[in-house]
Length: 587
Image (tube, rainbow, N blue to C red; front, side, top):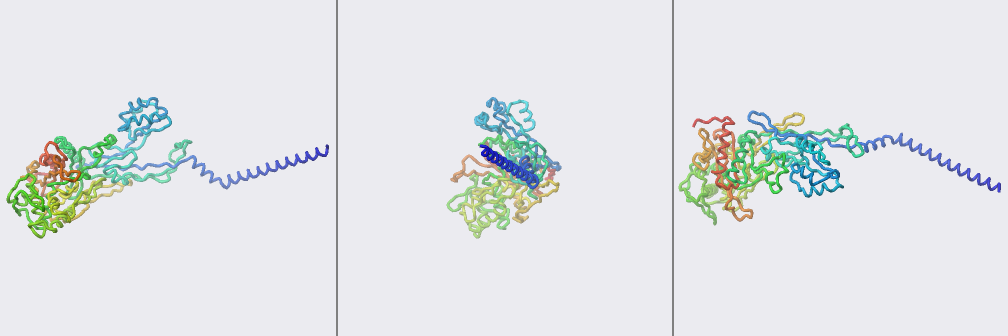
């Protein structure tokens, strides 16, 4: 019907009008939204876009370097920065994992090759680190092999130009850029500085496509350190102790040389050692090579400790160098019998004889004199000796700038009398080599215990220099008169006693040998065929230029210090007299 057709046309037109209206409204809303975004939210979206196209990156701080000097003050680097490469592999492109490992074997260090082969055969893995410290020359060798899938990425690294010579002093920097052992660990924060932060535009994979265009935080480079170590003296010590260990078929050995007037360490050498450039090559069962035995390994100092007991008695005025007693070869303390090391008796002996001949019974006699009754060991005997042991620095760390220093062990003054009798001649007390040489240094200089130190100065990134001055731990431990008297007594060890190999025409040398027993690990006594030979001394007596300790651990050829440590001391001392230009006194 015509009327129905008209109604349908009106209804259709209405729907079209509504649809057009909605479309117009939607268009207006869209335009409004775009206007709002472009005008009112423009900055917000710009920031979001920039955030998606750029990333923050670390600007590594430059690690401070480490130097030593020679006698003329010329500097020599012992820890430097150099460009290294990180070697990695993309398993997707490794055609034959076993063949690739074989070609690269000498560059892989101490790795589990079977485990590495499994990783390289996993094609779902795209990145396997092989070595984080590849040198420039080695990188060239690897590039020339043209092995598919091997990636070399440049990075900063650490180089130790002197190799093993200073390894126990420097320590090393590991693959995570953290100092391990030595000064590298102890002064890690000072050396490493503080990294900076920058922002750079990146591609879709996050790889920078522009240089660091916006530095947010500037890096603060690490400080450079100049040490007290004399390069030439260190070389003398290292060569001599290596020879001593090999000749005596010993397990290890160490030498410390220091300035008794300041506490400055002139040399600190241990053998065996390791190359900090290739620390990964040290087998997993030989990690003790990383340890600086001069400051970490404890030992019973043996007869070398007798000078401390004697110092206490001289300074307390209980006796003099010519005070005598009757040596019967043994002394009874509680239910124990203490004998001289050689099981001999020497009759009437002076205190100089006690030091020269290293008489254990003489030490027991001295301990009695320190108390309230000269015929027995009293509580005061133990109190006085304990006080001097502490004053000389035993039982506490010296504070030297090296990681891993031990503090040793001293029995308290409530211990049994026999324990203290044993301590008078260096048994039942543990010490580091550094503690022992530092205590004798206090005798050499007239009674001052200095803090041993290695860092002569710190050079800040801005060029400012911070000089390290000698630091006194304790002053007037003993009087200058007591120190002089004891020095003359120690001279007789060299002139007439077990230190005779160190005798040199025109030079007055003071010293004391020590052949220490090694306690069993279960605490039930001492090892039968193990000992540690040491010799500690200084020269010239009238104006000491150096104090030195030589220690040889577990020799198999001859166990006595007279045959192991003493000749090594003499060898180094002869060189030092020439190097330091110390003229003979004419006697």
